[in-house]
Image (cartoon, one colour):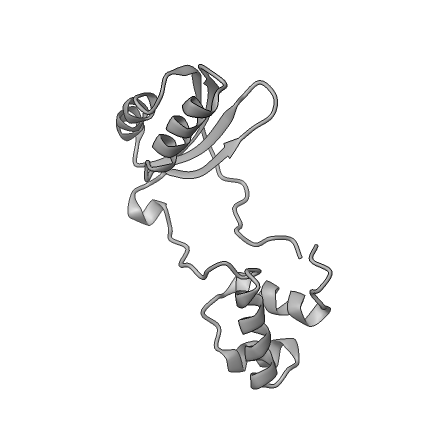
Length: 153
């Protein structure tokens, strides 16, 4: 963990991860500071890039996006040209919400969110058009046991 973060910085970050809309007054009270020092710390953490951005978390089910698919991809080739084509193509697909290059048997792992199987099939056809793929394996999430965006501080 970043050694320049003191316990108050960590408390600020925990509070903001729980609710990024909290007012500076409420945040300051929760972490034991007055408003100006609290605001300065939030500004510093933002300026340093510790706080990347603030977002709204949406309810997938209420937006009829109930299907989560983990897509394991094996590369057809292992060269920079292929990597760039696949990375650009897959990252540009809005259904891909997470995208990782992996070690081991799977070269890339994508987390995909879609409405249903038919929507996934349409997505799959666009994915395989991004670059020649060696193998694609899809695993459909049956139940979400835990979901958090909060990092362990």
